Every structure is written in structure tokens, then in C-alpha cells.
Length: 311
Image 1 (tube, rainbow, N blue to C red):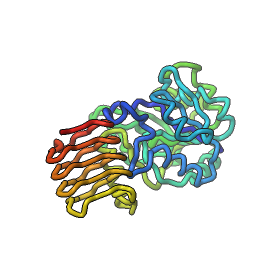
Image 2: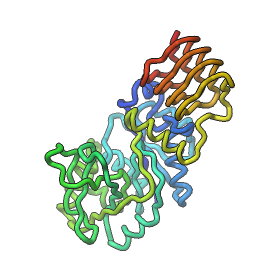
Image 3: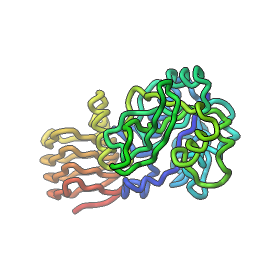
Image 4: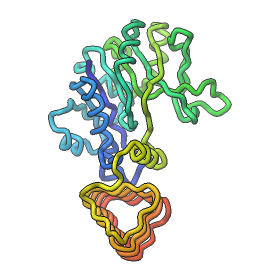
């Protein structure tokens, strides 16, 4: 089995953090999101993994080297279009994952159901508290998909069963995707496939854990989720003065320096940040190497890009 991680997005909702860093390398509790997704796949026996790239692709190539197969997109091709471009690589049953989600789940049950039902496409689902922001999926009593709906208006919602951004696909699915044209699985490919081969698309719950990280709110929650699971908030190579005050949940990255009398609360600091004496940081996200001068109060909820200096 092979895998494709959709990693070409620009991460616009996390700007300015993603102006200098591709979204897949955004750290979640110190570890880049793409590193976590690759590790999830490798731990379950999937070693042949491809990613599509668009925004700052050189950073991802430098990080992973020859461990991954790459597809550079001159223009964004969408979820399905990006996968189509790697048709030569995806020549056997394969799994697709959305690169801006934090996952922890088992692949084997999805693959077993896929094979047992002789499916061309198996869609993992979850119960969404906000179905208007999701692609929705309806199935019959045997788990066969009967209907799709993409991000409906509140008055149009007919289910809260949502697409989890994890698909198990057969190469035959790629034949229905046009070459070199931007298209989407939820909007384009799956509805057309449903018309052509009804009964060959199935859906079942993802199981495990799923968190979108594409917005500041969801990104924060992904970090807090990992802290609750026991991952460390303070990197072992960070320096925190014993006279600094840390309250609530905080993620403090490698090489950070927190001076005496500084106050941190519910904040995420990427690597190399410096917080001066008496400075206050509350509910903020600070990119790499941000310097907060002595006595500076960072606005509540601020998002500060790499290398900024606040004095």
C-alpha cells in the first residue's frame, strides 16, 4: 500500500506564520505536522509516501530529503488534481490524507472494510459539531455512499457525518480525474464516481483522533490536545527563569529564553523566541525567533510572524 499526503496549500488562514514556513512544517507541540503524519503512516507499515508541494517547497524537500516522493505544482491543482499528477506513483491501493489535519488512527480497519466491500473509494468520516464547514456524507444501511454535500448553508444541513480527509482508493479512481486541471474530491470526483459506479463508494468512521489545524483556533486546540495526551509543553532545550510565571497551557519551543518576571499564559512559542524581563504574553502565537522586549505586553490573541521584534 502507498500513501499520498496533500501538502500543497498555502496555509493562508495561519498567516503571518505561514509567510515564511510551509503549512506542513508548522510545529504542533514542537513537532512539524507533516513529520507526525509521515510517522503515523510508517508506524503502520506504509513506507512509500508522496507529497504534493506548492508554497515554499524547498523547505519540505530539505527536511525530508529522499524519504518522500515529491510533486511540485506550478499552480494549485486541488485535492483530486494533485493526486492525479502522481498517477504513475499511485499504481496500487493507496491512502490519501489531508496535510493540514492532525491524526491518530488505525488504517487496518479502513483497508479491511475497503476490500470486504470491493470498493473503489472508501471515505473515512467523523461526527462534526459544525457541519456547515465540512463536506458531508450520507450512506445506506450497508455503508455505501448515497449522497454528498459540500459546506452547506445551515438551512441545508441534512447530516453531521463529515468527510475526515482520509481516503482509501484504487488506481481506477484516477481515470476519472482530468489531467492538469484543478479539481476536488468532494466537489468533483466523488459525485461523478457515485453517478458512474453507484455502490462502489463506501464510508465508515475514522475512529481514533482528528483535529483540523488550519485556523488559529484549531491550531491552538491541536497543541492543547497533545499536551493533554502527555506531550511536554516546555522543550528540554528551552530556558525558563525560575522567576518567570507560567499559567495555564503553554508550548515553549527549542532555544526559547524566558526572562525573570515574564508572564506567559495560554501561549505557543516556536523555536528561538526571547521573552524579556517583565514582559507579558497571553493567548498569543509567536513564530520562530520572535523577540519580546523587557516590559512589553503582547496583545491578547496576537499572532506574530517569524523574526519580529516587539519593543
